[in-house]
Amino acid sequence: MSNTYESMWLELGLNLDAHNSLLEVLGKGYTDIYLSQKDRPEGMGYFDFVMSEVHGLRIKELVEEKKQGRKIIGSYCVFVPEEIALAANATLVGLCSGADFALEEVEKYLPRNTCALIKSAFGFKLGQVCPYLEAADMVVGENTCDGKKKAYESLGTLMDNLYVMDLPQMKSGRSRDLLRSEYDRFKLAVEKLTGIAITQDSLKQAIGIVNAKRSALHRLNQLRKSDPVPISGLDALLANQVFFYDNPARFTESVHKICDELEKRIDAKKGVVPEKTPRILISGCPMAVPNWKLPWIIETSGAVIVGEESCVGERGTRNLTRDSGTTMDELMDAITDRYFDVDCAIFTPNQDRMDHVEEMANAYGADGVVHYGLQFCQPYMMEAIPLEKALEEKDIPCLRIETDYGMEDLGQLKTRIEAFIEQLK
Image (tube, rainbow, N blue to C red; front, side, top):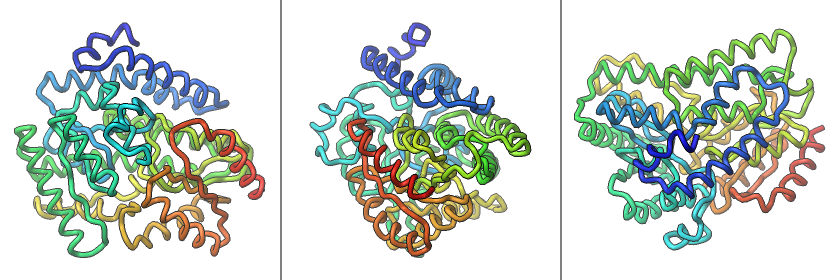
């Protein structure tokens, strides 16, 4: 891939030596974690191809879109509405923030005890290794937490296309009004960027496209309720990760194809693990590519992951946007209502998330919950303690894990997770 795309990467401003090193690590990690799995669904071949071309063919497509006048918008969070971007003929892509990179340079801007996700975003920019970031005409940040809010002040000095969105921190009428006003402001910014006015028809069409993507994942998630489970948690996580940067129509079609295959597997009682294998629900912080450490440990320790209560998972995709509006105001209200229902840990109080984790554990037949918290991610780590207590009161075992992107704690984590799984058995 490096020889084929080097000129494109150079034009985007990537550091080729650093980028090649990143791709080498990414390729090895993917081979060791994903391609070593046995009896995977054939439909995962598409997602393997996507990952093999994650910085290649997909970037070439985005560059071609830019040449044709289409704008690329990069986002770090599920609160950025893809519907608004698509309605203005722009493409929204998720940005790299799932691995450590250029940490020494990052810590010239951020304290060492900053969460790995924020440091990763800086590392990919400072290291010049993320083609999605460099291809973006607008980069959208958001003040989901205090760490991000302050970090964007520094990140803004490194790029001239950063747009920061204000998000509410409480669930109230005034907070909902704030979110609506921010989405109105974002709509104007996107229209200015693209030079295209969003119409009622274009917004309604965009809502349909994004709803179709989410509905495909809903279908996949429903199939994971079967026993034996027809797809590994790692492969299902990959589909949730690819959701953020693949072409929407192609992604939707590919997920439905794999669902067709999984339905046949279920009818044949064919699973990736035997029946009665301990079933785990992962809850907590998002897992962006290539953050596969914890799911890999779980699924090589005698359990299978049946669901993700995460922004890269059901929290980010479970709600559809109402498409019944007949005016621009009604459609913008529908978008606001849809995203306001996302029960991110930034909200206080956040009983909705507590209820949702319990609901998911029961719906997916989970034997236990592993709560994943990134080190120094205060919102999720603070919610972990009351969440654990609430689950155990319902006789749902819960294991709290706090880690980062490094591999130094691999042995310790595996020991704890193996003991938890043994307890479930």
